[in-house]
Image 1 (cartoon, rainbow, N blue to C red):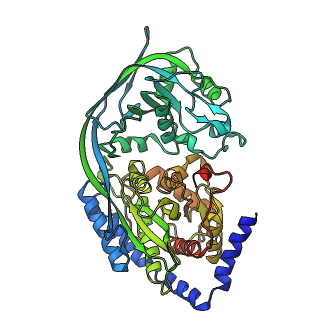
Image 2: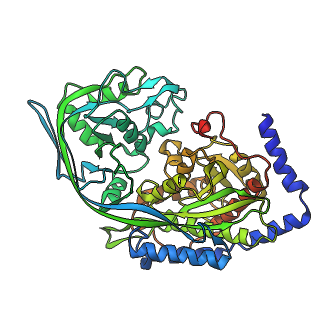
Image 3: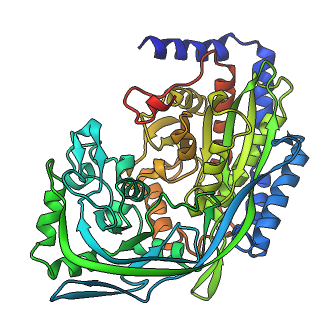
Length: 544
């Protein structure tokens, strides 16, 4: 309570006690944000000429040079020791997966078809990766969470085995508000955690059971993500500490497996959501082999810097990922995955925030770093690399403000906070929202785990309080139901599809307003005496 009072007081003093000339400077800088410029930039970024902005392609070269030119036009300094670029060492892996996934017991066999029923990948940076006669074990949700008194691996040794796990966590499965975080996904529910924990337990392979509601997206999203080539960070250990094989199966495939066992699938998944669940062998063994072609190269993050006037060594980092899926499977005659909303509009919006900062006569007290990261669509690789190799030390990185997946829905009444309750950054959001006659609201679908699915999460895992906000829930013109229908339509018809492309006649006024909101939030944080902190209930609090 005391901390919140001090925080609110400092913000009030900033806005009510600062000189009129400072406030006029801020207001004038806000006016530099341009809807026209925003639309022109997103039109360029999501054009066919940029080829879907895939790293390691001509589309990357065009994208990063375009962003560099925009930073130069705004008069912002290079963000990485005299360069606007940060090399991100990566490996492009072209994999050949098995056509069939076969699970065998002494008397029975299950055969699944690649792409339609299962998907496999590997992060081992080798030309040939395989597991042989690996026992298949069902480990429920595959979670080890001491704070929730939960251990799905208790009493079983999975070294060298293949673990089959459910996506999401028991809170979502039961809708019990007192179990984990209830309907809201914790990081334990995210598939990346399942892979990490399986590796810590010594498993050779991990297979996640997909379910649209629990995962937060349909099977087609996974298919698009596995099509063609994948990207990995180049590491000295070649990811030998990870499972050899990482895979998904559909719910129908999982049921097919269970019908060849003595276990009832529907009963087992209910049992898996109860405390005290015990993992067990399914009685099958499997062999999986993947052949890979490897290409080592550097992709690039794009950085620009505005030095602070008083606390130059402390930094606020704005992020947006510049990449998308490039050229992929044909859908309705189109093969270019342009990434208009994901993440063209957010990139264009961040440029407008940068325009506002560069227009200030009185520069902010703390430094500002604008960071366009690569390979978000390949498991946040660009932001992961930056968080491990920061230009500013992490302990001096005050906050991260992330732009992700904006829709052109016009001006909104709300500011939706994804991962609501994580840090006291939300107090700054609330104050900035009030200045725009808006209100803050928690994300409507916390079960999707969106807080763990964009680049702010790389900063959160490093201990930096991080924000993911946007107008999302309540249209000033059309209301809440209309806004939700727009979002549902986007997920169904455009997300990670060629249909996510520039169209004429759209309303970017809300995106420009969000760009101003991000500017105001950054100014408040820059002027505050104290650095933002995680909330008491945040799983990231101990990292700060």
